[in-house]
Length: 384
Image 1: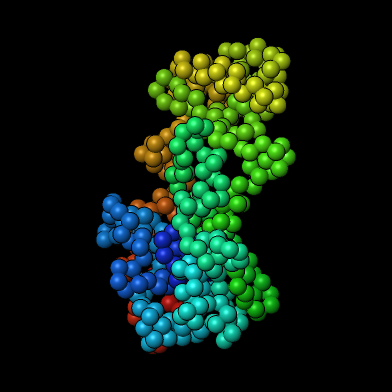
Image 2 (image 1 turned 90 degrees about the horizontal axis):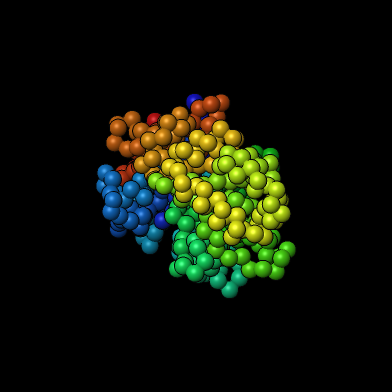
C-alpha cells in the first residue's frame, strides 16, 4: 500500500501526549517521523507506568509506533546544530510542544528556521495559545479540561469533578495539529511556501464546548453536569438493567414512539408531557423515571435485542475487555499486531481503498536511531 505521506520527513520535538499524537498520525500516514528526546530518560511518557510494556510505559508505546528516536541534548551546541542542520536539509515538517520559550532559546523556533527554509511547515502545539496573558503557561490535559469548561459539564451534578477517561484535550489537539499541517502541505504544493501552524490545548477545549456554548448563548443558562444525558434530547442516557447498563438514544419523536412500543408502553407518546422532544426535555425527570423503572426489569441483552428489533438506537455499556473481544472490533481490524508479535496496538481509524495503514515499526527504544542524523545517513529512509 502506498501511503499518502511517503517521502515526507517530520521532526517531532514532542513529549507527553499532544505532539506525539500528531507525530503518530503523520507516521501512520507514511511520513518518516524523527522523535527528538532528552538523552536523560527521554520523553516523560516513557515512565508513565506501571503498566510497562517491553521497556516503556504502555501509554508511551501506544502513541509512538512507526517512529524513529534520536536523543539529543539541546543545551549542547554541537548536538543542537546537528538537529538544526538536519531540519534545514531534510525536514518538511516540525511539530513541537516543548516548554514555552525553549525553542526560541535554542533557535529552533519557526521564525529562526523558516528564515533559512521558507518551505518548512512548522506547527506549535501550546497549552493556552499563541497570544494572551497565559500564552507562556504550561498545561496538561486535566488542567485544560478544568479551565476550558469540560469538567463543568462532565459527570453528575453534585458529585466531585470528573475528567473524561481518554485524554481528549491532548488527543484532540494532536488531531487539530495534523489537520493544520495537512492543509499547509496542500497549500505548499500549490504555492511552494510553507507556513507556521498554531493550535493549543485551550483552543481544543473551546472547540469541544461549541454546542454547550451555543446553548448557553441562546438561553442564558449555564450548562450543568447531566451524567450520560444530552441537554437537548430525552430519553437519551444510560439506564440500569438487571445486570448492567444500556444507553438508549430515542432522539426524535418517531424513535420515541418505536421505543415506547418496544418497552410495552405505547401510551407514552400521547401523554402531553411526552408528546414531543421539547416536552420530554422539559419533563426529563418524569421521562427518565418511567424509562428507568421499565429497563430495571430485564437483563441488558434483553433490551438490546428488543430495541434493535424496533430499530431504536441503543448500546450496552461495555468494559474494555468486552470491547476488545467483540466481533465488531475484530471485523474493523483496528487492533494491529507487530511483525515480531511483541505488540498489539490500536491503528489509525482510517482506510484507503479499504486498507488500513500497517503497523510497520515498533515504538522506538530511546536513541535507537541517532545514526539517522549523521550527514552520511540523513537522507530520507522509509520505514521498512
